[in-house]
Image (cartoon, rainbow, N blue to C red):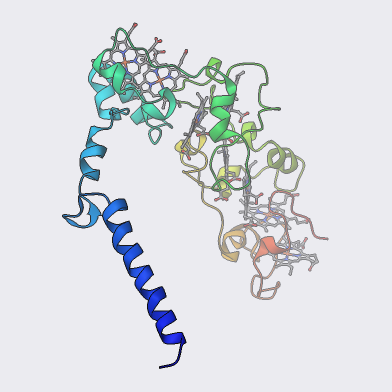
Length: 240
Ligand code: HEC
Ligand code: HEC
Ligand code: HEC
Ligand code: HEC
Ligand code: HEC
Ligand code: HEC
Ligand code: HEC
Ligand code: HEC
């Protein structure tokens, strides 16, 4: 017999004995009772103290706030995200009061400009956006909105409006080219106005001989392979 065989056998034997000892000493008692788990784990998890109550609970006593939240922009942000775990408050509302976050730093956790957030998520630059005033002085935390809803397109699209005002299209109202639901002024990112999609749209005013007094082109001959606004900026159209 080659001499490495008994050596290997010795190693194997030691390892097996070590495994048996380790299994009896280190593996928890209830391991394997219900499959490949420590059965007692469920009991210890159940024994944890409950910290969060869930927003349905809050509605029992703060129904108005819950209603306001579900109807507003924070419908997706639950009570305890802002007020912290409040199970103790639910069982003893007068003694235990959950904190209400008052400072700007709290809101900016979600709203400070950050390129990695989803497009369209409302973001602000805290250094520019009304610095030194608490956010909740202007925004109701339970149903926040940009206050004092501006009615005119120029309130939010100032640059486009200023350009158009001095362009050939000054007399063409924004809404001739963009069908704009009223809701756009309240929820500008989720409710969007239409935008022209075809050459025919511009052709309605500019195609030959349809309307007098408007510069005319021949729709079939005038660069037919491209959309008009690939060459003419619609808010400041020019011919060069
Ligand atoms: C059983 C009724 C009850 C439930 C359920 C309840 N609250 Fe309250 N909550 C109260 C009462 C009562 C007050 C005290 C009102 C007061 O002092 O004017 C209060 C006050 C508060 C305050 C203000 C604390 C302060 O310092 O003024 C916050 C914030 C609050 N609750 C959040 C919550 C949240 C979040 C939940 C859900 C997890 C919740 N509450 C569930 C009864 C309840
Ligand atoms: C986006 C964060 C946020 C969410 C979500 C939120 N709260 Fe608040 N809550 C606040 C802030 C901030 C204040 C302090 C307002 C103040 O001092 O003017 C406050 C104040 C309160 C108060 C004190 C009374 C009042 O109206 O000012 C209660 C009660 C309360 N919240 C309950 C709730 C409940 C219930 C929910 C869920 C339905 C909830 N909050 C969701 C941020 C939040
Ligand atoms: C946990 C993240 C979170 C926190 C904290 C938070 N918000 Fe929001 N906020 C949101 C979400 C989500 C929306 C809805 C975004 C949407 O509709 O696309 C929103 C919407 C808003 C809007 C509406 C903007 C718009 O143009 O529609 C305002 C204003 C706002 N929050 C202010 C606040 C203020 C003030 C605070 C602090 C009291 C705060 N938020 C805290 C997540 C948060
Ligand atoms: C002095 C009042 C005031 C304060 C303070 C204030 N805001 Fe605003 N906020 C506004 C107004 C007005 C608008 C709408 C016009 C605009 O976008 O500038 C707005 C818009 C927003 C929007 C929507 C932006 C978008 O592009 O849709 C968010 C989000 C917001 N604020 C969050 C905050 C947060 C977070 C704070 C605190 C760090 C804060 N605001 C402090 C007045 C205020
Ligand atoms: C409360 C501010 C506000 C007002 C008022 C407003 N808009 Fe907007 N509008 C926005 C915001 C914010 C966006 C999104 C910009 C972005 O995604 O970069 C937008 C986007 C648009 C878009 C682009 C849509 C897209 O899918 O690319 C058009 C077109 C538009 N607005 C037209 C209008 C017209 C026309 C009016 C007036 C009838 C108007 N808006 C009034 C805030 C406003
Ligand atoms: C003559 C038609 C016409 C008029 C008038 C017009 N737009 Fe547009 N607008 C367009 C077209 C076409 C596009 C699409 C451009 C593209 O897809 O590149 C557009 C795009 C936009 C966009 C998307 C962002 C951008 O700059 O491309 C916004 C926002 C917008 N318009 C707002 C306005 C506002 C506000 C007014 C009024 C002040 C206005 N438009 C007037 C034709 C028009
Ligand atoms: C409601 C009618 C109307 C629509 C729709 C319209 N326009 Fe115009 N456009 C005009 C009028 C009116 C003028 C000339 C105003 C003037 O006399 O300066 C003009 C001028 C122009 C000019 C300038 C011509 C020059 O002589 O410099 C260009 C380019 C132009 N439009 C492109 C477009 C494009 C691109 C679209 C589609 C996005 C479009 N227009 C949609 C009415 C319209
Ligand atoms: C490939 C670029 C391009 C495209 C696409 C394009 N144009 Fe032009 N357009 C021009 C140039 C360059 C001129 C000026 C030279 C000329 O008259 O041919 C012009 C001139 C015009 C004029 C002025 C004509 C006059 O007699 O004063 C109007 C109006 C016009 N275009 C509208 C449109 C419309 C509407 C569309 C879409 C159906 C469109 N253009 C597509 C490049 C383009």
